[in-house]
Image (cartoon, rainbow, N blue to C red; front, side):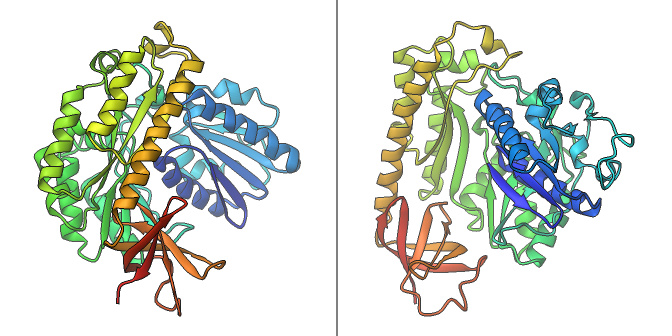
Amino acid sequence: MTANASDKAEVVTFGCRLNSYESEVMKKHAAQAGLNNTVIFNTCAVTAEATRQARQAIRRTRKEKPGIKIIVTGCAAQVNPDEFIAMDEVDQVMGNEEKLHAENYDNLGHDFGLEKSEKLLINDIMAVRETANHLIEGYAERTRAFVQVQNGCDHRCTFCIIPYGRGNSRSVPVGNVISQVKQLVNNGYQEVIITGVDITSYGPDLPGKPSLGTLCQKILKLVPDLKRLRLSSIDSIEADEALFQVITEEERMMPHLHLSLQSGDDMILKRMKRRHSRQDSIDFFNRVRAARPDVVFGADIIAGFPTETEEMFQNSLKLIEECDLTYLHVFPYSAREGTPAAKMPQAGKQIGKERAARLRALGDQQFDRYMTSQMGRSVSILVEKYAAADKSVIGHTEYFAPAKIMGLCSLDNLKPGYIAKARVTGYENGILITELDH
């Protein structure tokens, strides 16, 4: 959960990078509408826990700030608006489409005069056919920026509620994406992250049916001053030759890929209604590494999916080691009402928690092993912030490894957003220790 405050409205963000992008849009609309003393909660529905945390934060905020107005939006509000309408703390509920339109904030009025608006502003997300391009000129942190290229999902994984919160897949036109990236680069951003719900499904709804790979190629060609391009999360089964080429041949495409794997067992993958097999994932990792050996991989893994046996779970553990994954996002399975998996024989919450803990423990080992392997190497660090305690700066390498630059005599050339060349001299507390390369 992150909170971003503007002069007149605060946006509290839960969940994914797409939500972070959309929170910037909402913050801009709220400020332009002159909303005073307002907190907007941009919720997540990926797990029941995420929804619970949002409700808890809403209640806590109302208790701490009794005079404010509270707007709730995001996937949890879209999927189950009645749950938030019923909360006495909530003044307004907006759908995922409605939250992105300036007129909906204008209509609230400066004092939320409810004679000017209904408490519920939400429509059928499945009826939305386009994803508008919302121009973001900058972010609260002036280092990296997200660019939304796609929204929604046409797939129906049995565990996932997100398509019902985001609607069907729809893409932002290539020209609009290029304009957005150019604007951000002109405003000083050197790294852009391509984001969406299912970005590898980009393009078939657009004229000419461009793919994610061709979009990335065009970005790098038409925005030559962009130093770094990064992908948020991909589905390897949808990766075409153009995407493979840009990942393995373009130096400005960062060598860090995060994949939506979910499981390492074929039977569980089938019951999840995933479109890849265990071997498909292994083949993708091997093919990318053969062409660009330095690529570092992360993945989403669900623990304790319905019907998952210990043997099936072991296949997920083995896949992590076999494919040498570095960054793991681990989720204990969370039954979401209205999904097919919720009707399957459940493995049990305790089993899910225990297996998730084992996955995270293995993930920590993998991460430590990778970070230790970086000793003595030269890296490129995007500076994010200054650490006054030890007069260092903190950022991430091209491989998305957290790193700290030590031994600084001056910070004149190491402002947030600057890309510094450094050499790794140590590793401690989850962060690489480096010194500037001179």
